[in-house]
Image 1 (cartoon, rainbow, N blue to C red):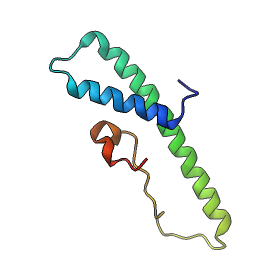
Image 2: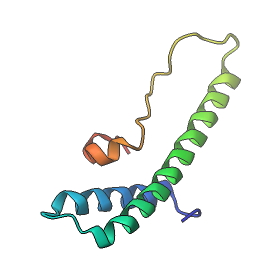
Image 3: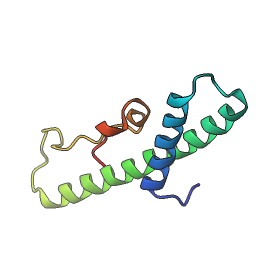
Image 4: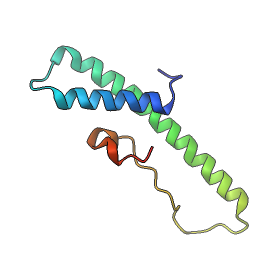
Length: 91
């Protein structure tokens, strides 16, 4: 899973969240697999977001002569929001 893209990993999170929402009764036999795959996918998403944030900071830092104390104009939501409401994620 380490070579997955953000989009692929986010898709895994969406799929597992939907599976859990659709279940009337928990399927304990599949739960360990769902949790394990979801944690791996979350880590991929988190790594990609952190890489983008660092790249943006570097790019913005290279273009600004004086550092600004203003917060960034774009707020990137945490991947955990994907488990709450995937429609809130702007990706």
